[in-house]
Length: 242
Image 1 (spheres, helix red, strand yellow):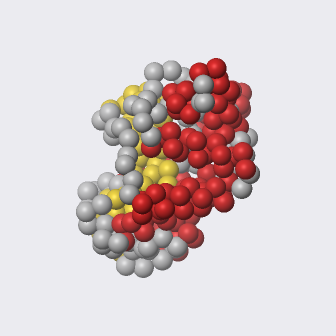
Image 2 (tube, rainbow, N blue to C red):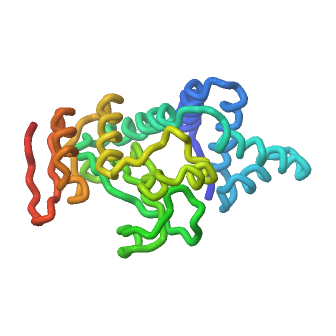
Image 3 (cartoon, rainbow, N blue to C red):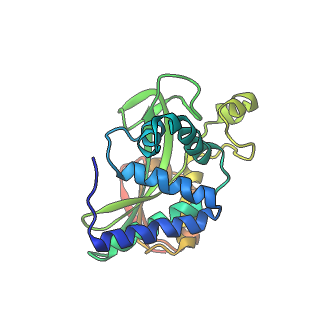
């Protein structure tokens, strides 16, 4: 799938790429990001690194070098993904606000089904994606919604206690040493806090009982000054105005 841009869209795209480039700072990182981003938006059905590199390389012999460059940018290069996400989120939120206001924030978990044991955080655990307990990764996410549209503004991988307690396994999966176990409600609260700090338009916070049953989560949300409506195990939905 490819996209056709009008003159105005091209200017917006150029500004957007430039803003992310400013966050990345380093010239080589800026160039690698632009190459990868245009590869995602450009021609070709396969959007993984090697096909993107093959399309971007000036000649076939250069494909390996371009692939290694993109992999270095995505895996080893030192840049702050939160800063990049904020730029992307503000762009998407601005487009939503042109049509209608933000009315809710939704915290939910996404499951990524896996077959092996090496992916960071993978284990047998329940995921709504499959509707059962299965081998997967889990990532809580924060989505901002209008009446008709939505955009995910944050997502954070859940690292189970069994992983966090196994330093060797974490090192092999390239999980940074500073990453520690956080319950999903803690991840959710961290995402809400980041969204408030970023100044995203407020909305009614919605989450299921995995979050609503935790008093510390509810208290943290109240401290941030948000209204919320949380499912609890008795299957009631209550709106508490802070």
